Length: 234
Image (cartoon, rainbow, N blue to C red):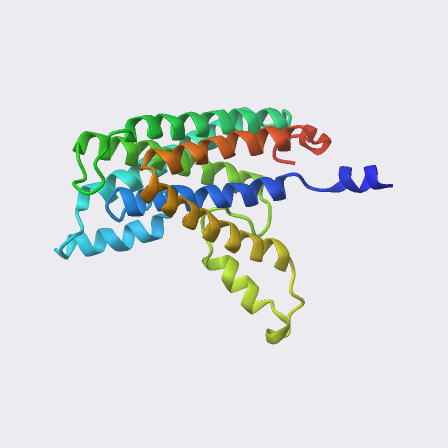
C-alpha cells in the first residue's frame, strides 16, 4: 500500500519547489550582484527599463534589454526542445532540460569568478553573466510552462499569492493547493536569503554554482520516479 501511494505522488511537485528555491538564488545573484537586474523575473526588468528610459539615476538601459532579450531566446529554445520531445518520455525531456540549464548556470558561475560587484567590472563579464542566466531562466520558464503543473511556475509569485488569498476560506473558497502555493513562496524566500548570504560572504559565483547543482540533482531525483516514464506533455 505504501509503495502504491509513493508511486501515485507527482515527483514534479518537489522538483518545482526546489527549482523555485533556485530562482531565489539566481535573483539574489542578479539583483545584488549585477546592478538591480532580474534574470528570472521579467516584470521587474520592464519596470526598471522604464525607469532607465526616464533617466532615473542608477538605472541603465542596456542591462535590462540584454536580460529581456536573453530570457526570450531561452524560452524559444525551451519551446523547440519541448516540441522535439513530444511523444517521448518525460524523463528524457526533463534530463535534457536540466543539463542545458545547469550548463548555462555553471558557465555563468565560472565567468563570474573575479567579477568586481562593487565596481560592476569588467563590463564584458557583467553582460555575459546577465545573458547566460537570462537564457537559463527563459529556458526554465518555457519548460515549466509546457509541464502545466498548477500553482508552480517556479519564478513568479503574484498569481500564487493572489490564489492563496482569493481562494482562501476567508474569501469563501476551499483553499485549493494551499500547501504547494505556500511552499513556492517559502522556497523563493529561502533561495533569496541563501543567495544573498553566499553573494556577500563568498562571491557572485557561489549562488549561481549552487543553483546549477540543485537543478541537476533535483531533476535526477525526479527522473528516478516511475511516474517520469509518462509521455512528455501528457
